[in-house]
Amino acid sequence: MALTDADVQKQIKHMMAFIEQEAKEKVEEIDAKAEEEFNIEKGRLVQTQRVKIMEYYEKKEKHIEQHKKIQMSNLMNQARLKVLKARDDMIMDLLNEARQRLAAIAKDPAKYSTLLEGLVLQGFYQLLEPKVTIRCRQQDVELVQAAANKNIPVYKEAVKSNIVVKIDQERFLPSEICGGVEIYNDNGKIKVSNTLESRLELMAQQMMPEIRANLFGANPNRKFTD
Image (cartoon, rainbow, N blue to C red; front, side):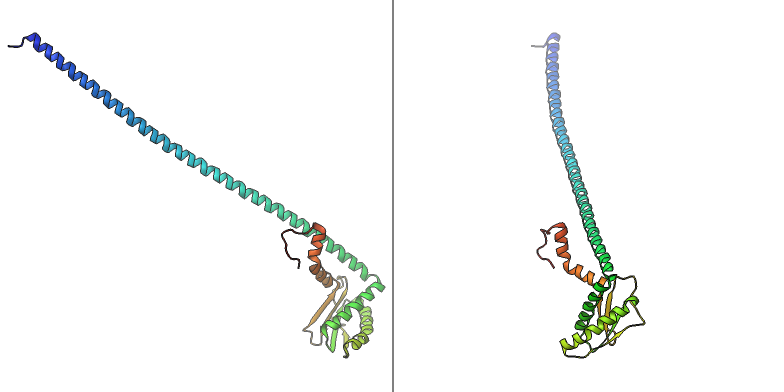
């Protein structure tokens, strides 16, 4: 049975409708897949950027924290240095005051003579030499000679040995020092420095831990005092 034109047109319309429906579904499928891929890519990009941002700010935070620690350490070191300098200045003031008091002793003939006698005799005992030379300030020559004369028999009696003492009249100790003597053996290679400054310096070195403890309190980080 032959198809009429109307039947042909009807079938053509039916086929076109079917094709259009398939095309529409295909387009929707492609759109849905593209949307899904877009969302996946967008999520991946967002996550990647978020990780990068988090890493950036984490590094920034660490850098700031490290910078703060460095600044704090520098401030603490500066404060510690200021404290140490203030303590050293205080000790220097104390030693300067002691030097002034020593200079005052040298201006008292009775006290200074007694002090010189002790310094001279100590030098004799430290050298234990048969011949010694004493060097002093030019203004102290007579006092030193008297101290040597007084201590020669004391030394002889103590060590059972003779001693010849010479006062150096050519080379004197600087007049600006507080006083005291330097005693040499015969060839001048061995010296006992018993100037008031050297005695003060020696005393300060020996007593420095005690001086610091009295001025600033005991150091909790120090196990030994030397």
